[in-house]
Length: 209
Image 1 (cartoon, rainbow, N blue to C red):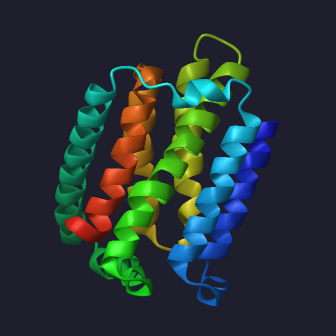
Image 2: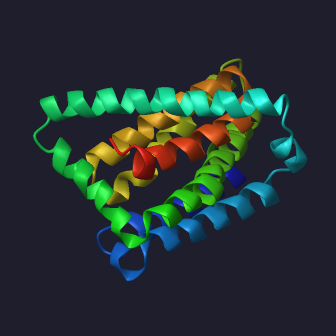
Image 3: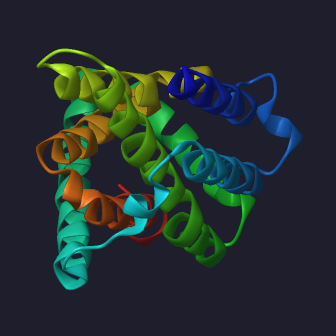
């Protein structure tokens, strides 16, 4: 029940941030930062063994692994961008619409928000809380697999308010990658947090695709 409520809160926040009816009311990056804080509060308050979320085994390997995952994922998206542009006439316009939100703040501030707040908050929420909790609450031998699939699907679907197919697909691909890695090894959560933060900063600021 609690994961459903938390996902519902995230869906409402993403509606306000991304929907064409509401997104013009506030600066996108400050709205995302506020949403990240809400997700962090939900994660910490709803996780019974919250200390486990912040336990880091082999921190250097987690850091390097996270950066490596981010770089590899950037490569996947670089290739996907080229292929989608060849396949869909609307792809380039939708990608440009996503990048238009960079006008809301200076690039340096956006990078810091992505690295230090937005990226980590999203990963802790979706993998550290949602996928982890669903895997524990679902019954059966396939519980962890179902939790992985459900979390990746929910993560993609909350972006549907943007009415941007390319953004929804990007969220789905990234969610599948991070979710699969977490499914294989929950101990990788710190590396996934690093990966999400670094990938966000790379895609939006450092090396835009």
